[in-house]
Image 1 (cartoon, rainbow, N blue to C red):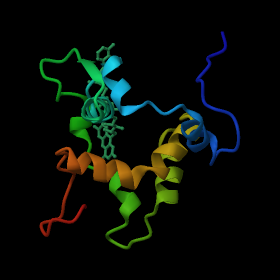
Image 2 (cartoon, protein in one colour; image 1 turned 180 degrees about the vertical axis):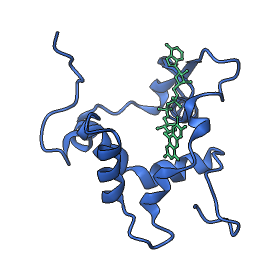
Image 3 (cartoon, rainbow, N blue to C red; image 1 turned 60 degrees about the vertical axis):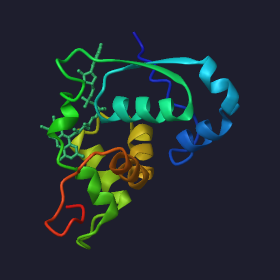
Image 4 (cartoon, rainbow, N blue to C red; image 1 turned 90 degrees about the horizontal axis):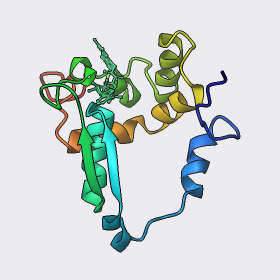
Length: 143
Ligand SMILES: Cc1cc2nc3c(=O)[nH]c(=O)nc-3n(C[C@H](O)[C@H](O)[C@H](O)COP(=O)(O)OP(=O)(O)OC[C@H]3O[C@@H](n4cnc5c(N)ncnc54)[C@H](O)[C@@H]3O)c2cc1C
């Protein structure tokens, strides 16, 4: 059986950005006509649910833990912080991409990891705005 990941075609660096650009926009007044089901409430699901709800969509978020906050995400310390390189020790968006591919034993979908790295700084800003604490130095900067 061939597993179809439905990753968009094209060059690695263009796959997701081109796909997103090609998607039709939804008129703000039509957003409330859509019901979106989000399965899982880790950082990905919970932030997607909160963001889409803020945009006006009707959201139903499902999880199977006692509390929606008990996803794997609770264990993360903030490796994605590397993208910001506050410590000026050689981290970067590219290194986040490289390390995530390597850390995934080269089995991760490259295009999706590329997209993660590409928008990593925005992900941090979005999550912080939505209340995710992230690992921090005593001075308050991201660790
Ligand atoms: C121990 C540990 C340490 C980590 N450390 C770091 C770190 O330091 N830095 C870093 O950047 N990343 C780290 N990670 C990775 C990071 O936590 C994950 O990449 C990230 O949290 C994934 O978020 P997610 O929302 O995609 O998935 P998850 O947080 O795993 O959320 C998925 C949710 O979906 C639910 N779910 C699955 N199937 C169903 C279903 N059928 N119905 C309902 N719910 C369902 C799950 O129960 C879960 O709640 C760590 C991970 C672990 C486990």
